Amino acid sequence: MTQHSRTTRLEHYINTMLPETHGHQRRAFGDFVAALLVVRTCCQATLARYFANFEAASRRLTRWLHNPRLDVQEQAHRHAQAMGRQLPCTGPVRVAIDWTTEDQQHLLVASVIVGRRAVPLYWEAYTTQERKGQQRAVEQAFLRQVVEKELATVERNRLLVTGDRGFGDGPLLAELAHLQVPFVLRLPANITVCLNQQWQQLGSLRMGHTTRRRALGRLWCLRSNPQRCWVAQARARNKKGRWEYWHLVSNRPLSALTMAHEYARRFGCEEGFRDAKRELGFAAARIANIRAWARMFALVAAALLLLTQLGAHVLGHPQRQLWLRQVRSRRRVRSELSVITVVCHLLAQGTVLWTLLTPHAKLNLEAAL
Image (cartoon, rainbow, N blue to C red; front, side):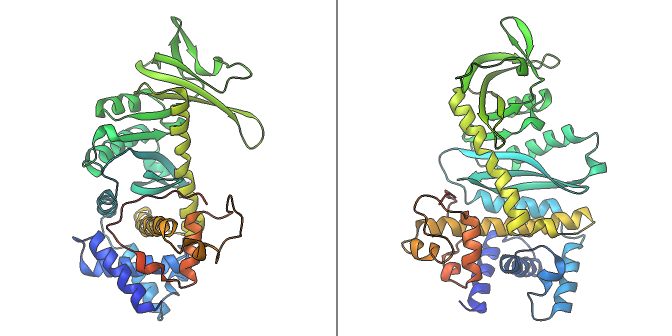
């Protein structure tokens, strides 16, 4: 594949995905995404060396990252709009909300679960000082933004929001109930529920030796700010062989098994963060300015969307076995590589994968080889 044809396909994708963005911004955005897919690091010097003129590319990247006219949240909004057009028209849309942190910089990210991976949908960046004392208010406002604006075209009953223990508190449960969005959240063990007419901590409700999951029914949760929800418990051994309990809560009458399975899908966002930080080198972005750091993440989010879409095409293509044998072992059951990693290696080898790129394909990825 020639450099010209690769650039043409990506330029068409960016122009279709971001039709209302300024032409110079689209060209810069497309160029840096193409460089990121090849060099797979957010180190600015390494990213600039992808281009023929290192000095000019370095200045261009610096200007783009620190351009105050490039509104950070508008970039995230445009990305969410483009991704929303690629979501399936039917079936559940699973959204995982979580924080990811690098030093004193924090990203609150809403990710769409696609198979066993997650693709960033919308994000907001905060410094430690900005986050201090405002975290709950930020999370509630963020949730309203995602549901009411970024996913406004998706029916509420098709959405399913998941979050870890950090989001299991009364105000957020009340916000989700107000938005009428189905959710499955994990609660901390010290949260109290009213069971058998007594307020008890979830951590004190132990299960039998052979029990893996159980539904506790519809209970009042959080004595200080009561919310009535469906509660379930599940447990499994972690990597260290110790029992790990999940105290799960939902506003839908789901079985304990369904709750556990839906919450387990949330870990796709952790895999998505790992892809962003390791496969695309976002952890190597040493950018002190929080807005510039967020603009760099826009490149990462777009690259992950492209890789996910190409991965979906690879898994459904007649030549997939031929392509996969170029980068993975011949194990018949599982592979040591994720689909995102496979696509990165295939792009580095200059395959014809770029010809499969289309901004109109629906996301349908099962990232398990």
